[in-house]
Image (cartoon, rainbow, N blue to C red; front, side, top):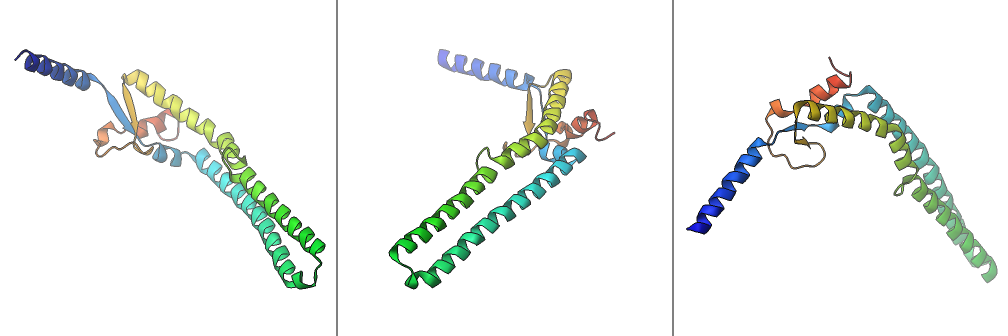
Length: 171
């Protein structure tokens, strides 16, 4: 009986604490897509990525052309020339793969460019969320765009519009 009473008291206390917590929901994807600076940054990133991809594709096409040429001439080449051409092909392929990794790999040029262009915008949003949280005394701010599983949220809890207003994007 004593255990039951203690368990009930703990459950009631936890329920009271949970209901005292204040939270809101935001949609950072919606917020970002509503900011003109972000759209410009995305266009710049897309253009740079496309340019780099063309550069990489050209390198791989060159390797492919070298390989096809080698296959056609292989029967007429000495062992030494075969080895030399194979080494050239492997070296060019490695150059192309290294360039691909440099441009698009983990913490590569595209990552750095995205950080350069988008991070300042994300920082502004974060600061606006922090101000809103402090002024409204929210304990939690859930982002429904970040993969947090929010099955349902009351639209009046979504403060995305307020964040956009505080950033000067909407009035």
